[in-house]
Each structure stands twice: as structure tokens, then as C-alpha cells.
Amino acid sequence: MKGKFLSSLFLLVLLNLLVKPFYILGIDAEVQNRVGEEVYGNYYALLNFSFLLNILLDLGITNYNTRNIAQHPQLLAKHFFKILTLRFALFSLYAAFTLISGAIMGYDANEFYILAILLVNQFLVAIIQFSRSNFAGLHLFKTDALISILDRALLIAFVSILLWTNWVGDTFKIEWFVYAQTLAYGISALISVSMLSRKIEQIRISLKKTFSLAILRQSLPYALLIFLMMMYNRIDAVMLERMLDDGDTQAGIYAQGFRILDAVNMFALLFAGLLLPIFARLLKKKEDVSEMMYLAFRILVGISIIVSLVLFFHSSGLIQARYEGASWESVMSFSLLILSFVPVAITYVFGTLLTANGSLKQLNYMALFGLALNVVLNFVLIQDYKAVGAAGATLITQSITAVIQLVLVYRIVKVKFEIGIYLKLLALTALVFGGLYAYFNSDLVVYPIMGTIVSGMIGVVLAFALGIFKISDIRQIRSED
Image: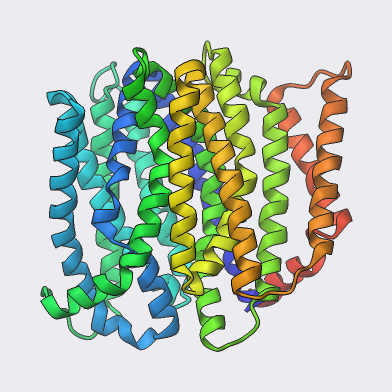
């Protein structure tokens, strides 16, 4: 199982490294440069608003389905098209409530138009994620890896044409970006559903009331968890845009830093996508999950420490290199946001194990506390510190909720506490921080991109020296391949 996890992870990371960083830092960031902070900030706030009630579109079905198919693979043929049909019904509910909420928020006609298309995009993404949950549940990780990058690869192609050719004129419009998303997600959803349908003997599109209610009843605890975590992860931009006179601009500033955090978080999310079905199957068979948990923990948290500290120290040079005329607020908000990558990484390991264990009650209490804390912090900090305050609220909330999940794992799952791994990670933190601090207080001057790459490589070497990363892990990847 370790070899399968590592080889699948290697393929996922490799494919995503080839596609997603270029999309986020090349395409998405260039769109913001073309349309300006205010226009992009308004789009970014609408995008985050479309996420807030996204739970009505999913109702926890994706996570429930991953765990269920991992433990009972034979249910794919029986459940797939019934759940797919249910999703169409849920979209009507999601769209109605979101548009009504938009009216209450006071969005104008143009904002409503963009929001409506974003709702369609969310539906298409939900179809892709549901299809991927089946591939992951069946442990078809290589297929899942290919589907995971398909939409972004198509989006890169479509938006590149719009950005760097004159086929549609010289002035780029934010609406074009939204239309390109619809096309890319639509094609990806069609391909992923078609691939799964080949594994099912008979296609039956039908909405079964009894079946749908049973699925919703079992998935509701997952739905509540996703809703609460989505709220405290996405509400920052909405509160910025609504609370401040220059809210669109501040949301745009926040988006500059959050975009890079989102890029590194995508790789952490790959761990969770692989770990959930693996943990679920191990727990179903009543096998020990400690070895798999610590394998993922030391690799992911080790990477997050290196990445967050390197990007924190190089934040000014990186932000100014990517965004013309970037302000002090952009640099400071990014500096705080990128540090939250460490607690987010912890969450992706321990939160996923708790989800696979079915400890939804405890996770929901944790997420409710996190949402309340995040909203209060945002109300207090945004008024005085704007985008920087929202970034600070995110760092504090993510750190506290990560610690809570760490404690819950040891209390509920009863895994053995390995203090040696924690001491090694603390040593890595001290060495990387100390080395970067000494470098930035020396007379050496290196171009930000080069400095970031070299610092990251040194951090990796230190992680190998401390035994956080191991040569044996690489051997397992090769042997599995």
C-alpha cells in the first residue's frame, strides 16, 4: 500500500507540476494584470461567493462516495448514475439559493450575469469531482491523475489564445475568462463521465426518491463539514469586498497572495485525495494506519515547512516580480498567507484520517469553531488592516484548527505517538529559518526566483539529512512502477 501511495503520488505531483503552476501563476495572474485589481477583485469576490453555498450542490456526496466505493467497490455500477441524476436536482437548489443570496447582497445586473455562469462552472466541477471520487475509490489513481489536470490543461489552451492572440480583439475581458472555464470544465466532465460509464454495463438516468434520501442522509455529516470549512476558507474575500469602500481593490490584493497559496495547496490536496480511499480501506480491514499516516505526515509537512519559509523570506521579490506595481499590502498579506500552508498541510493528513474513520461529529464541532473564530477575526482585523488583516485571520484560524485535529487523531484513532518525527520537523524548521535569516542579513544578492529555487533545494537536502525524506521512499516508487 505504501508503494502504491508513493508511486501514485509521484505521478499526480508530476502531472500537476507540469500544468497547474503555469495556470495559476501564468494564466490566472496574467488575467488579473490585464483587467486590473478592481475588476479582478470583483470577479474574485463573486467566485468565492459561489463557493459559499456550494455545499447545496454536493451535500457531502463526493467524500461519502470516495469512502463508500473504497470499502465497497461493487456498488459503483449500482450507484453511479443514480447519484449523477441526483446532482442535477441539487444544482437547481444550489442555483436558486445562491442567486437569492446574491440579490440580498445587492449585486448589480452584470455581477448577477457573471455569478450565474460561475454557478454553471461549479456544477461542472462537481461532476468532475464526483467522477474522480469513483476513480479514487476504485484505487485507479493513474486515471484520477490524468482527469485531475485535464480541465486546467484545456483552460490554459483556451485562455492563452484569448490572451496572446488578436483573434477576439486587443482588450481582454473578464467574461472571456469565465466562458473559457465553462468550455474547459464541460469537456472534462463529459470525458470523465464517459470513461466511468464504460465500467458500468447499463446506463440508467433516473431519480429514485428512496435511494436519493438514503444517500443524502448518509452524506449530510460530510456536507456540514465541507460547508463549515468552505465558509472559513472562502469568506475572507467576500467580507473584504462587502465591508470596505475599496473592497474590490482589497479583494484583488488579497487574491494576489492567495493565488500562490492556492497553488501550493493544490499539491497538498493531492495527498488528501489519495489518502482518503487508502485510509478508508485500511480501517475497513481493521489494519494499522499509523505507518501510512506518518509517511504522509513527514513528507507533506516537511515540504510545507520548506515551501512556506522559503516563500515567506522571498515574498517581496516574488510578488513584485509577478505583479507590476505590487503594494506593501500585497507583500504582507502573501507573507502571512503562505505561512498558513503548514497548518493546512497538517489538516490534509489528520483531517483526512478522521474523515475516513467516520469521526464527522468531532470534525464538525471543530469546523464550526473555526468558522466562528474566522468571522470574528475578520470583523476585527479587516476594518483596520484590510487585506493584511484577512490574511492574519486565515493564519490564526488554520493554525488553531490544525492543532485541534492533531489532538483528535490521537484521542480517537489511537495511533502511536512518534515524538521523533515531530522533533525532526522542528529541527528542519529551525535550520531553514536560521539559514534564510542569515542569508537575508548578509550582503549576498540573488535574483528572487533563483534565490527561491536554491533555498528550496537546500531545504530538501536538510530534510533528507534529518531523515524526514528517505531514499527508501524513492525506491518504493521505482519498485511499484
